Image: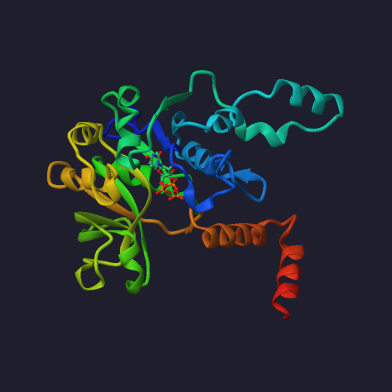
Length: 298
Ligand code: UTP
């Protein structure tokens, strides 16, 4: 245990990347969705960077058929590096792809039976430690990063945490929504007790407009809940159902992320993320702004 925390530290992160990515077909027929780039970095790279910023360096990828490119992305590309060196090109650009030997583990989800099932596939690697989950198609941009903010909250509360975002009330039916309890003092209004979780509620039944976004810190007991859990909505083993069962047995809180979230699992979200990030980059912003004006006839 480190000095600053009363609880077992979060050192492991699970990245479920075994989904089929059907919304991006045919692009994702042979390329994993998580390797689609926002400008010049694949989605999985943004998620791994966010994990490291939060001090998490043991990375567990739950992969499936056709996902080997994700693992190769984090491997040493000897020929490429040798050629680049020979041409006097800097290798700095590859730095984020380097992983400490032994810190990347893959487990296989042979059939994509749902997010909950994908997480359960990592149970032997998780053991009895708390762990983080990143859904790489949800791109979270902010300072500090979403997981860093969550780990800081975890060090105070322990238990389980999910990140949430406020959306217009009329949009809640597309998401998992929390039933909020008390807002905790000392976190600038960003830490809320979770009394319940509802998946895709009707507008009139929605307990709040705080939707679950793709970052979690969970206790290992969730694996036992998942073990005994049948299929839920959409015929899939749902993580939300398992988390809902944990509420009341362990502390459960929501962190309202102060930054921006882009749903890169949808095409418009993907385009929005690309544009937004390009407009933030000093090497591109002016050209992209001029291009957007031209396209919009402004
Ligand atoms: P999504 O709901 O976005 O599903 O999964 P998907 O298959 O990736 O994409 P679409 O909807 O068909 O376009 C959310 C996350 O959970 C992972 C996905 O890889 C993604 O990171 N996942 C989902 C699994 O690893 N296994 C599953 O069985 C389902």
